[in-house]
Length: 143
Image (tube, rainbow, N blue to C red; front, side, top):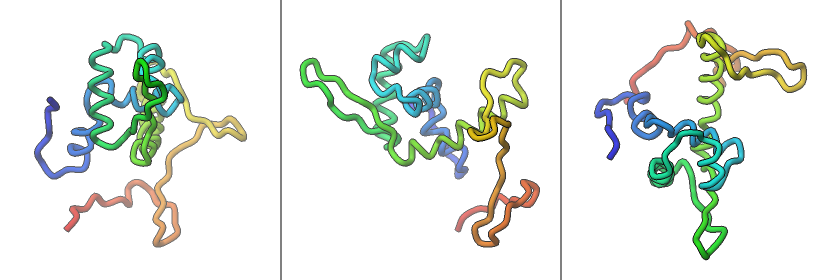
């Protein structure tokens, strides 16, 4: 049973879905092509098999992944990210950028595929058609 945050905050409500230990790492492994239970188990060193099974069921219930039967006997499934699961790529990239800046030992960096130089995140207002500074962002309650 998940521990749930019960207050009106996008971060809290998102953590109710992806905030459990291993969940983001499972989603990241899926986005890197590890699409079967055994591939996930082999690529997520240290994850208990019962926990992986539980997290996959939960991610499917939360509609971040779907499962497709690819072998009937014994039953084996491939796990595929849904559109909302794929949308977490921006979260992964932001965490990588945060790690580049703040971790004592950095393991990954984001670079532009054409020139191999580091990238940065920018905010864009589609209404104004302008890139905006993060100091211009206002977090506003929705009606």
